[in-house]
Image (cartoon, rainbow, N blue to C red):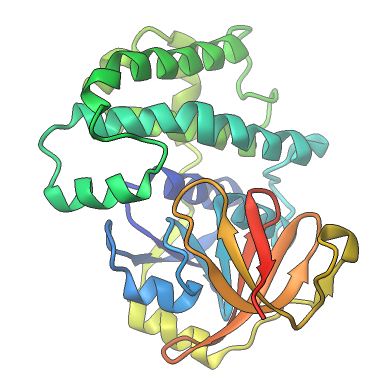
Length: 304
């Protein structure tokens, strides 16, 4: 089964999945999506979810890097993202990397690059609901302090000279710690100078970058949509009463991110467990697809 990643190259969150491909040594297809809305080819697959990246496997559409990581691990347990039983710890670290680390970095990316195109500023001001763009210039000292605090925390994790965050093997934890550093290097003005004070982070950064991106091949969006139309989802229907009382397989529901980019995706409930949610939906261009989300961080509500 082909892996199709819908992303753009400067996306920090997409870098997480590209590194997961590299760690596992997987081949994949790259579909470039627009940096800003509208993203009609992507939302034909997702039903409105607009965050980057999205992984397509036939007619199964995986949203959120946490859900993507878990699915890659399920299909390819060798060269594990979660070595030595570390899945729970690795997934829990996402709250640190996505909130405490990424968010001030995103503020710095927006606030230190004053020559960003108007289209990007307009799109991100609507998307990044955790930032007040009107007060952003005055917030830069605070954002630097918060980002610097996370770099110091990362340095403390590595100060004993270990190769990777969990020891001798690379893991999803390394990818979670790395992607804000990658963003700092490429998207924050004077990012290199900011990182220069953390030598252990710098040495570890090179090891994580060396994981690479696997075997990448380019694909256009029309071909990806054709693949979705021509194939059928392989998702198994499982709806646990304990995961959300009152919901059952086949009900019409909406699934919405709880943080930002909170666009609901409507469909027929296929999966609801303590780990994942999935809905079946039909689109004129994509055909019948099943869209998958992690359970954590997403609201699911009956709509009919």
